[in-house]
Length: 266
Image (cartoon, rainbow, N blue to C red):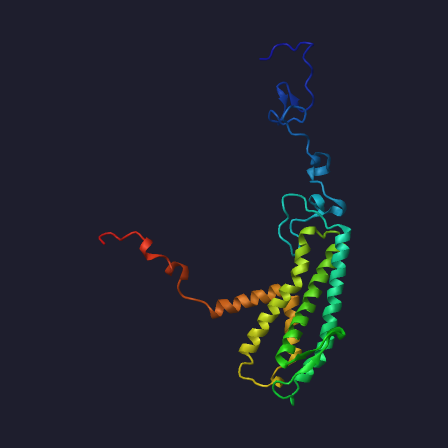
């Protein structure tokens, strides 16, 4: 039994025992060294977690979300936003890309139609002077390749400009994405050329003559390749997996058999 309580012993607070706070382990008090302070949710009714404005979950430092659309997982350190002058230069670059691509495509299209018409002679050429500079004699194949390049660059511009306007409007354009915008047109052009070579070599292998190709169809496919580069790459991967599938493991078959330990009794 506990002895008589002296005057020096303070009366326990409600919810506490004489040995210490009820329901808390040593070191949990916010006033003890090394202890955890009171949680923010203790001040909210029902122990709810604090939320941001509008009842949304609080964002990470820098306003970034871990599941940013179209981007990888955020780095551990803070991301550096693109400065205003760099944003302006990138926007002007995209606009200049649009002007150059559209101007080249508009001046090249009549030349292409002239050399691929049905009554055109094989090997016929037509003069092309983009923006009034120089003058090149283009055949049907060369003009088609240039149209594919311009159309895919136009599709790449649509993708890059849409992403640029979205992230600038949301104030979430980071400097680490600069090279993605600079290389976006080149990726779309390279992919469109590969798809064009596959289509010409597979679907039109037996056709001959400049009038056997449809410039509108190839220009549309090239533009879609530039606009949807990821989907086009995935489709090419599926085609390669189907055509080049093997029944054996090539890496295992190419192992150095001399390096294998000899079997027992050999």
